[in-house]
Image (cartoon, rainbow, N blue to C red; front, side, top):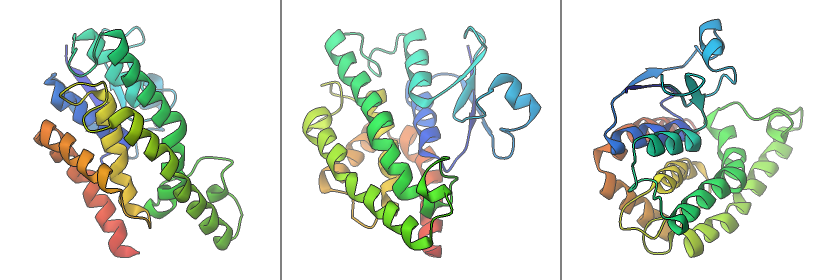
Length: 228
């Protein structure tokens, strides 16, 4: 059963699913959703107007979104134990890492990098308000400084010296975390050495499945850095 992925190339949320599909060896097609997510055709399938989103005939609604949920669904459907271990303890580590990332780490990543990336910021945040440029810059810097704590949690609890799930190969949680780290190149503080080493391990283990789609994100980040 082939998966049709609607994606935005510069996005690390989208990058996670793009890497997963390649690493899993599943049949898929990709479509750049730029400028299409508010069309009636897209909204009829993906009412959230979010990417990444997949169309999949076996899904009860025919389509779904959210990067971690997509990876969990496809890994379960295809018995991809190496990417999403079934053993309860290992799966608990993978699930908690993904939930912690999306609930705690990523909101800080978005607040510290989206203003520089030129991405739309979430309603109700300082960056999307009528605050002064100085206030927005201060809020962005505060979010960046706060990244240190959840990153340290990933180092000491989830990652340690290997991959999340206590396995010898990357899981969907490693794919999600590695993709997220790509945006931290926009921060003033350099990426911690452990994170650089970890990102290298993930990319080495996954090869072109990681490096080829990651080139889109890295290219966009580099173009933003040149303009700043």
